[in-house]
Image 1 (tube, one colour):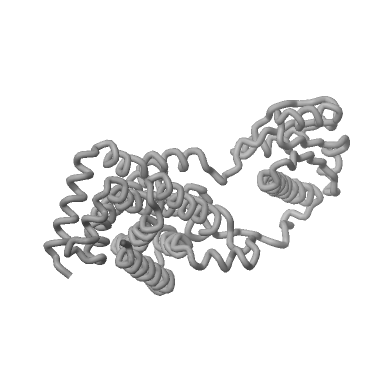
Image 2 (cartoon, rainbow, N blue to C red):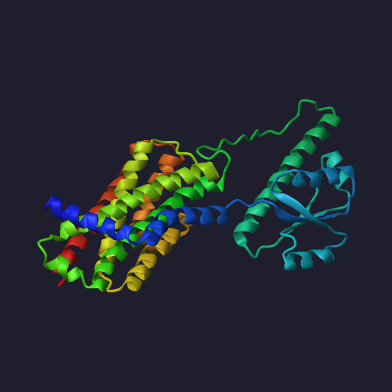
Length: 376
């Protein structure tokens, strides 16, 4: 392997990027744009649920019960209705997601410590949102019910009585349960793999379209030297993109890295090596930039979004789909990112993920070199 030939290809690629400032600007600005778009557009938090209320009791207790919903950040009162006939139109039009019906006698039953049924009509067209809304309703109702029971017992003379279960959950790693902390690592995986694979694949296919690839293959340049010379510039751009995304995540979304930045950098380097190797491999299968672009999107965007654990948990996937996910680098990089960024875990927690990424990088680089060696 000749370092001078690698440097010549590297300088050539950098000059080519310098002559095309639009492409360079896109490679550097696209990650930040995608982070802003996905970060602000995608949220798993369900807040400001539209609430309609039918209060048939109109007592102090019923008003206090309803205020328990409105004092939280999860519900917004959209309508106070007078009849159940108004519920269906509100849910049909999307004006309300939850309709609460407080029955007559609610206040008397609560004062006596008796159970009372409260109806909640929920729009189930979006199952995930509906399930979350039901959970919020149950939590608010349970909290108010416990307080009402304690108050009733005190009035009855049982001053020391209280609930038999003192439930105090402690949430680790993401105490505020912010979806940004969960989503940003996935966005980093998605953005890096798209930009690194796509840019590397297009760079080599561009040589084919211009007719210069044949000159490179008949020159003394070896396939490994060609791969390194072509991949290193985009590998460096990937590192700059990763640093930009992390800085923007801290500034815009308040997402901090709990673990070691050095460990994070090391895992990212291994991941990017696999990405640029995969990009070179895709370029050997393409004869035009359009085909290379489509293959890059097909093998990066959809697998990362669906099969990496970014949005959909593995436990909900069929066994065959879970098996397919084991060959995807995004799965391992995302697991390592969450261990480092959210949990602050050490190498022992994600060592197997790093090993899988290293195997992927070696495999894609080896196949790329083999394909280039066989190219006419």
